[in-house]
Amino acid sequence: MRKMRKNRGIAYLLLIAMIFAVCMLSGCGSGGEDQTGGDTQQPSSQSSGSLNPSGEKVTIGWSERALAGTPWFEAMVSAAKELAAQNNIELIVIDAQNKPDKQVADVEDLIARGVDGIVLDPCHPTSILTAVEQANAAGIPVICVNSAIDTSVNPNARIETIVTSDNYTIGYNVGYELGKKFDKPEANVVIMSGHMGDIEGWQRRSGFIAGFSEYQYEKFGAAKINILAQRYAGDWDPDKALTQMQDILVKFPKQIDILFSEGDAMALSCVTALKSAGETGVLVGSIDGQLEAIEALKDGDIVAIGVNSAVETGKGGVEYIMKVLNGEKVNSRIYVPSPTITQDNVDQYYKPGVPFL
Image (tube, rainbow, N blue to C red):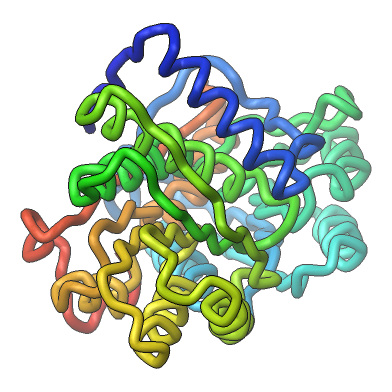
């Protein structure tokens, strides 16, 4: 993965100012920080049988933020189930349906069932803290996958690690690739976001702005981003993204240079809206690694995709809760591999029949 280059002082101040502006625009300034600072490492892609050396049955509870009808989360949980089955691990998966109160009740139910460990994909960074504290008190270790929780407001709630993507760097690399394809120092940008308050969404768009501005500064000695619109497609919903993009195109016809989507499903809807409106020349970047988005990249409709691997995140969740249960020391943050897909390397990542990388 490319190392981020250092800007000169004026560029650094410019980036900070723009990132701050996006945070204010999105209402993410008060978003929680995850507790997992410190060292990082990557999952080790454990082979069958190696996670549970005793061979005794282990029961893991998995509280998923939103499962039904959400393909990325379905792919993540499917990968987790497959690895669990290979290692005599019972995986109890409960769908919180993106309802924080339900997720609290779900985790409390898992505690009552006496599971050995809990894997948590939180739908809110703070609402779940009391339930996590209850799990801690019961001697049940908790790890997070995909999204973080904010333990700063309740230090008694502890997670052992988080398995996730480096969302800032993914966004940065997508922004940098878009910058390579854009030939002017000033850009009109639209950002399609998933869910208000999501830490990973804020990290992605902040990284995108920094990466795009970095390349523009290197090329032109200056960088200016005009954010025409940033919209939330509630819960990363592609249908809502389509409606939002159609509205944006009515308000800003023939004015958009760059579209950055925090998720592939939303990006595909935005591409549909652009085509329907006869908008050409808009450079599109996205994040996830969905098959249809990779096909759109092959067709030239998307410039760059940052991989947020559902499969590796799901496997990593099972791997690292088992490491904790086996008494192994784990780092506080586990980053899954997150390559950037462009026209130069798309054939390496294009896998027909595989819905998500």
